[in-house]
Length: 287
Image 1 (cartoon, helix red, strand yellow):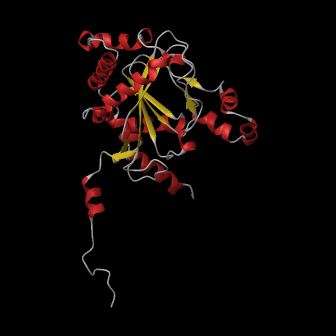
Image 2 (tube, rainbow, N blue to C red):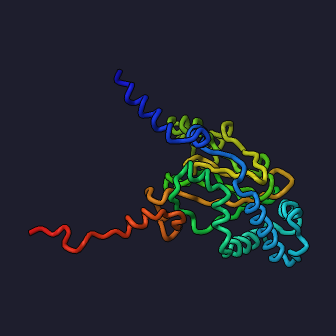
């Protein structure tokens, strides 16, 4: 009989969510990530086309000659036009111009607006600049070793919206350690302590990590508390991807603060009124 109130409370909680919201949330809770079609295909195509045009401009090419149908091929084959030594200059040029576009961040948010509301909340803070990654075939200079963002100053309340601008397969994509495998790893303190380096730790979990296959038109939302990273791209074409962190506006912050790294984007009217509320002068005065 003691368990009945808890069971009813659980059923009532689930009753507030649609089946789709429950399914989406359970995916994040059980595996640690959710992969799904974008909610705004037109916005995604606009973003990819703009990235291709900015890249072409940087390389001294005529962006007018790159149609929307040719954008993905241009990006995938960028290693034929730029060397590893020149890659970071290209990346920074596109990153700066893209983030300077006033329409870009709202469009990026709309790529997964409903999913973010379900998984994080409807009052959000968004990273002030969306990151851009480019990884050429065979390039070992653009690697992101195994890590969890929350282990290095990020709030554990953050989610990452990761968006490929080209089809990504196997080592061309990032890898993630599924939540059950990570929980097992963290429960084995002796094994973690025995790993003398990040590479040792990767070798320890390598059989469990998953390299994701994500097509253009899909998005990935993942818990940045999971161990993740990338390896040398052993595929034949380049990877272009965008990533950005979102968190509940009123959840705790870590090293990356609101107003510095994050910006409020969906503050609701009652929250604005509540934050601006002041008691009348003398309301709390005592005789």
